[in-house]
Image 1 (cartoon, rainbow, N blue to C red):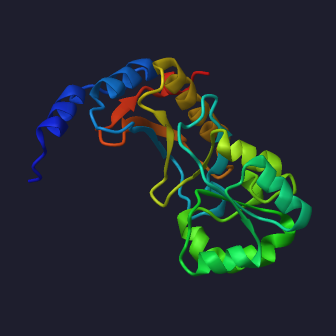
Image 2: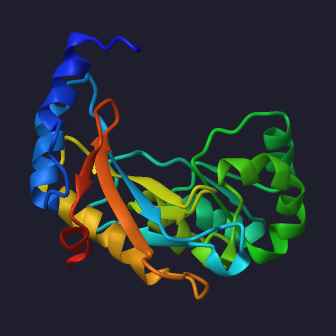
Length: 232
């Protein structure tokens, strides 16, 4: 049996038996039990009634969190000429074309979001096996393949979060920092849940939202009442 440290045991005991809390109470509990020496991320995990192996049950989308993520997002942009200049002016951390492709192929990936103009997709397409597993592949469905690179860069920097269901039917993401005010975390959580709810695929049968839980980076999860999480 795994042995937990004193801090971990205390955190687990604090949430033991507490289930289906309102978003407000869950956030309060998470903040009270976050004891790491760094500003922990507040993470959300949603169990969905879908089987992503079927194309008509894939859940994917993007949401702009009203209060941001609290994370410094590094953005790479594949673009040439004037569009490359636009990306740089908008705050992109890395801008390039074939040179950026070679850098990524060498194993150097120093960004959290990748954006590309449509004309660059033949180049970016060669990186599918590298960027795909890291969920970094530009995709027009989430706005990362676009001619409006400036807006895409600003959105990524401003707290936009992408989500994609995993094999087990789970969607997870960071929705802020423990240092955020409770009200801001609650607002971010409800915005995220709302976006996932609206992304319900046509092939989903039965209950779509099955369980929602939140946790801090180093803390135990707390289940949240579905009705409370869905209220906007």
